[in-house]
Picture (cartoon, rainbow, N blue to C red):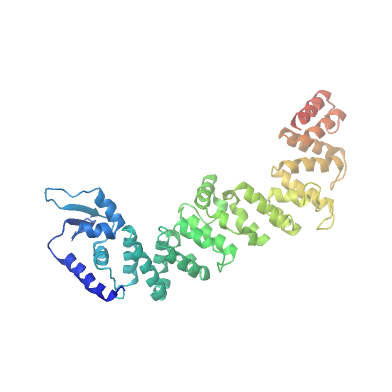
Length: 407
């Protein structure tokens, strides 16, 4: 039978050894100039109580000439090391006399010295006894819990807490100082009590804060500005649930930052929001999004359906179809330039006339020179028949050949 009643006396004797000026065989310099304190200790105890100190001592073999071994711990505060050293010797630590900032410092020092038993004890003590203090000092404790993976209990407690009240972080004056790892842990939480558009806005706020030269207005950004923000947020963006946005939120809040998104993600999201909502296409088109202006005419590709030209989702309206093709073509969208040429050559939404055939030739030529196969073929037909341009069989053959080569 083990009688733990005998342990307090052992603990007390070990602490007396620590306090005794005799028999020590190692000195420890703790802290940085100008605040350095020297502690006396015993190698045998440190070896068996701290894996970190054991590694250091293994490279500082005791000399036979009687010289004391000396090690330095510049990253630890002397007053905190004194507390931890007494725990190392006596196996006891009363935390009631310390405030929460000191307890966090003890936790960080315990991790530095690889004292796993003490780390677990401190985490449980904080969670079970200092809940109010954790909330009041959340700006300190939450980031600290993510400094490494030793504080998993505290990480989980803080993450669960913040998922219910995310504004504790997002409305904090210290938002800009939290790490990328902390931010990701928050936004990927399944039970985060915040709608996704607010999450996106706060992630943007954090990203902009990491780049002080950036304004909050993306319309003023250069390509370098967008690249800087893209690099900052590239690990965060995959955790934004964009499909929880409304179409209007996506167009108003995400579209202005499209250059920071992976191209494939942006294209998929744009189709997700707009392929099922012709009214949203009109919003996007009115914002002069060239793909939306083209897709407003062709709502679904590959023959799945059409919007204005076939009357799917809206009343059939060739004039509107022509109008949106024109807007998109004027912004340089290749397929719209071809389709506009097609409208001019066939009188769709504009009426058939010699003048419009000439305009068809102009748009076919623009699209053909950019490599559009159907435009190259149709341009060949115009040259072959002298429509909108003087008849020129040599050029007709040239464009037919270009179309054939590109197929």
